[in-house]
Image 1 (tube, rainbow, N blue to C red):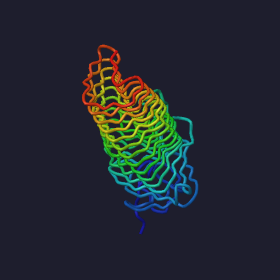
Image 2: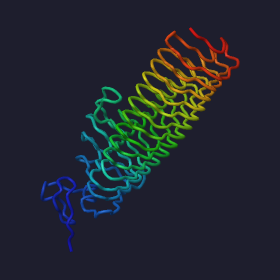
Image 3: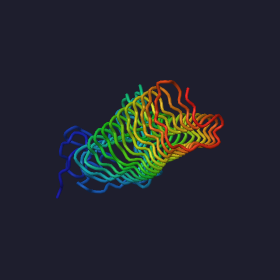
Image 4: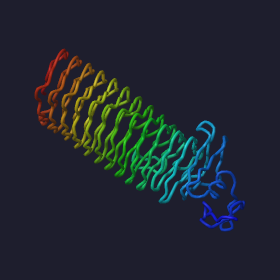
Length: 376
């Protein structure tokens, strides 16, 4: 007995085994045929090979898509918009596939807007952005999780996208673990909108923006990530909050961690080492707490606080930085307490400008070349 399915292009019913849709005339071949004829919750297995799509691929029912390995099953498209859109109040599992955009017009690679998804062992590459700024753009995401989707992303790679490697936005939740975000032109992994989630044990390297970026009102938990050779290791902007603990931010072009605008994160037990500018830097009206971080051998200061930023800096270790352990300027009234400032090439703590009025208390100093505390 024939069973009725819906065309993934126009939604018209088709009979199992038919080669085309009577509603829109779409000829089903390869992946489109498999998806159109799959039953709800069925696993669609894709054999080894390269699948070139003639149009954007839409999955708007609950199926699971499994390849033969990300080095063996490759889905490619040059059609603007996206390679794959998963849309609707459904749950999906995607495993062991490379998704690649090969066009020149703006496009994301994979977009997910649904109930939930689990993605394992996949690669997302080649997205193109109409990039105007890091936050003002169309397309460019290797993977975009949006809406209210709940996503688990493990063991994946987002690389060589002309925007962000992966972005989670709106009110979505994402759990990212053991992924790689490599050599994307903008941020490696971005939390935006009101997104929440966890990023743990990821490697973000060689990205043109932040290794991990937290924007708008996003509020993630970042732990044990390694961010190196990016413009900034981890960045908080706008009204972002969240927690970043036990991350390693080293050899980035500017700062290990940058907190800007009105952001208010908790930074704890992070290692910010050999960044070209400061280990941790606060700007604008940013605040929050930095507790027990190690900022060592950075190109300027261990921690820099500027403008009207007003964080609490507690029990941090500022060692061997090329300028001061902690540098304060602008209108800051930051609290500087129980920090250890040793072997910095200028001062342990330096306060520049008469308008800066920090509270400095119970800090430890040793072997800072130009002195322990300097007030301009």
